[in-house]
Length: 276
Image (cartoon, rainbow, N blue to C red):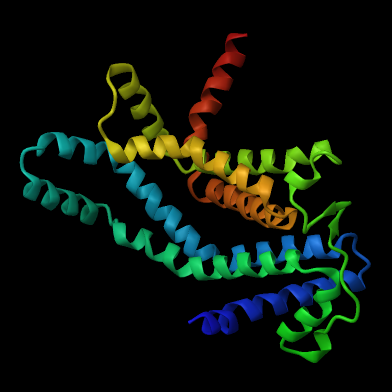
């Protein structure tokens, strides 16, 4: 299974990365390896764009049905069978298939994992091992490297961790900080505006007993902190990939579903400006 995964996804992605690198190197682009990682990540996002868009649209429809689902739960709280029947009827009336929202994620995960595996290997290679390893993986001899590539991106060593560079480069703390911020923005946008209002009302009335809702609210803050922590201890090259991936995701989320949970903050800011 591991060999099949390597041959079907890892080697093709390495080959595409090397093609991009050769093109940028020929054009005398600065930091060709760093920009190769960015372009490759964007390329993968475009490949998976239809899948993610389908998932986002399904998620948006599900969020729009949240008030209706809440009313059904309240109305049929003592009859689980009837609640299930009415819920499926509601989904059918609005053309929503909850299972369809999971399928795109399952299809894109192997590609995303393969990209992560490639970059983890690339940024972790020692200069003396780069040429032999890359030339072993690429499909065509014409793509072989003759010299090791520069593993710096505008002075930042892509193979080093921010935790190891902090004493020499105090500003490097901005890498995990921005990684966490971008992840928080994307997570916030994935929450519906309606859900934000409902959560606020529940907090004002009584603690919510809805485990899923509570978990999502906590994850909004916990997950970005975790990603920021990982970024602090992982090579900068992986953070470059993750931030590119997340920023593209933010733009796609905005294009498909708008600001989502950030809409509430936008309204608060505009309200304060109007009052001032």
